Amino acid sequence: MGIDADGNNGSLILLKQGAEARVFESNFVGRRCIIKERFSKKYRHPSLDSKLTLKRLNA
Image (tube, rainbow, N blue to C red):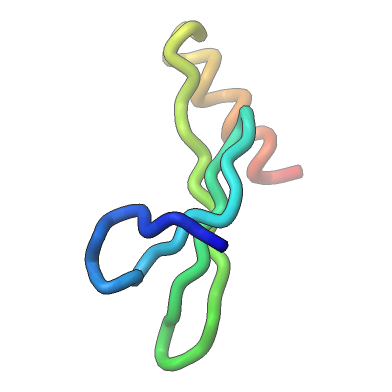
């Protein structure tokens, strides 16, 4: 069971949240899809955070 993330008729349903990202379920062109949102770490320097995030996206 998910939590409606934005209250907009269930367009995004939060499935999991971890230390690195949130994973949502949604529909795109009538098909079920998964959306992964990586968020910044407030305790890291912004330039270090963006480099680490980019490196993880390309891994």
